[in-house]
Length: 626
Image (cartoon, rainbow, N blue to C red; front, side, top):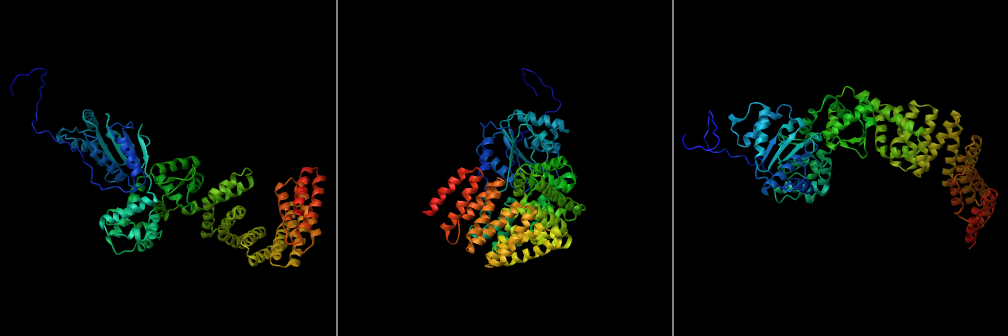
């Protein structure tokens, strides 16, 4: 080489004269239109646009098969089409959840440098050198987008983050919250309408005349439910249907309805399967995380509390909370309806149950779970006076019903009985009679097999109350008849009083006033002997109603006056209202009865210094006369 040189002279041993290597300006995989992610695509576009003030790094996280890669690639293609990144759009699958082929940062850097046009022989041999060269080249490049797909940890991607003003999109099954300043986007499953459009679009792409989605909407809805609205599962469903154009959607729905085989059915070919995708996430868990992931599936509820998970796994609540949070960040669990509760995606629950089939700790964990729920139900029943127990029962009712059924299934009748006893008053009071229909026979059978006489008394009482609420007089009479016999045999006057009171009510409703009067009179004597004023009120109200129906107004008034006196003596406004409501209605001689009753009631109120209440009754009496 010869010529005039002005300025600094640089001496080099080797000079390579060759055409400049071209950048791989877009290494994005091809992708078609994306269905059902319009909101998410707009959010990513707002992040990627040139004037955006969003953080340089955004992480799209979600469970396996939720469509993270598809979403991010579509957003990257859209950005490239708008020429937002003249420096290039680089894509790299880090395969972070593949235990055998995960891409190490050193290898990832080499791949990115080659994509930027660096010859192989000029790529530094060590990771530190590659990082320096990678960031140096990006510092002098026009705005660039780097898409890092399928990352399993921050350690895998941190060496790949540029230092200049470029954009990075990361997808991961973990919520990578330890990337300082990153925008975190949690991607959920498709909404119902989006899922239907997803399947319809996929089938129409294969065959524009395929109208199975629109012609069989109920079957499609069922398939979407069975797939948990998960895009990967819906992709497999669409592939199965597209591959067999004559298959009715209802036939596939039937095949997927079996919980045992559903994950096996949700596969297509060698490389597309829900179970295989879940396998990669599961294998990434630590041993403690994997153990709790399996254990939580033993709780039959739709969601599990931190306390129940701790009992299952025999952990402290703090340790259980940490592991549950880790599983949530790995998207192996979802947050429940309240803080501290967790749940599975439907398909992940099936997967977890598969993993727990041969769990060596299974039996011990189930015993711990039953003991936990029994202790909570019994302790809260005794200790709570603030209403929080009722609210807890309302939120946990479905779980507790399933736990009681689990106890029965496991052959633990005493546990089942105790759980049902803890729930029974709440279920009856709030009208959950369908639950009672299922549980009360279990408790009655258990009480007769393993319980004592008091247990049998309580179980019969519950069964009788259920029959009463169902207006099943024959069953009510049978249960209360058994309750009366067992109570008398056991020397339990409380049970006997309840049985006679209810038998009296049943017989009155069945048109047997004499039989009703005999039982109610005996119940009243027991109530007074027991000094059970509440039971006495209930019995007197029934006796008052029976007397009125038999035309014995003075007898009825005597019963009602005693109820009023008891209510006033105990400052019980609810029972005071009950007797006033009961006396306001009657089948015959309404006005005459009301004048008789109110004249006595006014004297009771005045005698107890409640003249204002007496004036109200006088006004009502005037209205009755009118």
